[in-house]
Structures are given as structure tokens and as C-alpha cells.
Image (cartoon, rainbow, N blue to C red; front, side, top):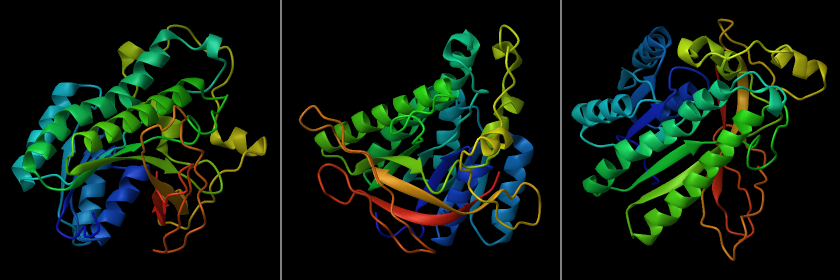
Length: 300
């Protein structure tokens, strides 16, 4: 899709962080938006801000771990606009990092429930409707270089979920092409000069009580401040009107998922510098351009 004006985008985790940044960028292109998030107050605030700027936007409180909730989101989106052209399965959480053998079963259940089952539920609820509509469209699943590209040892559970997201997106992309559909799939790798300082680091605020850790941690939870002290690069903060505006000028790469060829996974993506609306390219083993990169603000 080249022309986004008037098209409809659904974004889960759309009230903050990368999801909110995507919403702002899509609104600039004239897209109509359906934002989904588990946090009512944050969702209302983001919807209000976008509407005040002239965007056509609807907010739907959604728990992506529940298929019924995501199915209701799809029903609301189609009732509001009659079509969906861009689906961003973006909602994500990250449990406090630590040693793999010190994680608990609930760490895995909660994180996979949001990061992986949330993506699966989005595909199951929306793709059949998008196919039935017969229009061109794309499913964008947010992953992370910290998983399939360069696994982050301090965040084993999170990294494992992002590997799964990349794999399912490759499978979805291959199937959509094999079936000669008008849909395509892409995996979304946030990139830039370091880790993004977003609400992901405090996602325990949304952790259900019944999925709390079964035992106390033996070590303190990893924080962005600690990573900075260890020399891990973190995206520089932008200038904002409130503490929630955390990052400015973050580079976000959108890479088209391609089927595995010759039994080999495509080579690691290398994001090139972008600026404003300038587009960069990344290369894979096929030497075929497979992504466009934008520099967009990311808020918590």
C-alpha cells in the first residue's frame, strides 16, 4: 500500500510508547484510527489528543490475552469504519529480567499471553475479515531485535516471545502469498542507537494479580537506569511537555517478513540512518530491499 489517506489502522497497545507513535504517524498520513489498550485512562488521553489534532480516531479498551476481547475489538472496528487495512499487533509487556532458572511459570504465562497470544488473537480476529473485504492490507507484528536478531541475556522471557512473534509473522507472510491474497505481513523491529525508554520497563503495573510471581525475586529487577550505568545505550530523551514524553527521534524500522529460503533464515537486518520522512533501506540475504525506516517520536 502506497496511499494511506482514508485507510483504517488498528493498533493494539496504542495508548502509549511505540503504539502511540505509530498512531501519530498514521494520523499524519490521513489514516482513520482504532486504538486498543488495556489502560482506560491512557487510552482516553491519547484518543483525546489525536482527536484534538484533527485525527479521526476511536478507542477500545482491549485485553489482548483474551480472544473474546480482541474479537470484540474487531467487531467495533468494522462497525465504525467498515474495513481495516493496517493491523498493528503491537501490545507488549516485559517481566523484570533475571536469570532464566530464577524465572517463574507465571512470568512465562503472562508475557507469552500478551506478546505472543496477543498477536495470534489479532491474526485470528482480523485476518479473516480483512480477506473477506478483498482490499489490500498489511498485518504488522511488533517484535524486537532483542529476540531473533541479538537475544538479550538479561531478558530471556521477553526475548523468547519476540522470537516467536518473528517466526509466526514469517509463516503468516508465506501463507498469505501462497494463497494469492491481497494481504501481506511484516515484522516490526524498533531500531536506533539503543534501548527505547518506554512504558515496557514498568509493565508490571498491568500484570494481573493471578499471574503474579510465585516467589519473590532473589535479585533486584533490571531497570533502564541500571542499564545506563552498565554502559548499555539507551535512546536519548526528547524534549517534551510532561515526564511521560520519554524519547524523541527514535528510529523505527519496518521490515517485510519473507519466507525462509533454502532452509536458511534471512540475514540479520541492518537499519540505515533515516531522518524526518526520509526512507532508508535494510538488506537481507536476497539483496532485495525489504523495509522502510522512519524517524518518529516515541512516548511512554
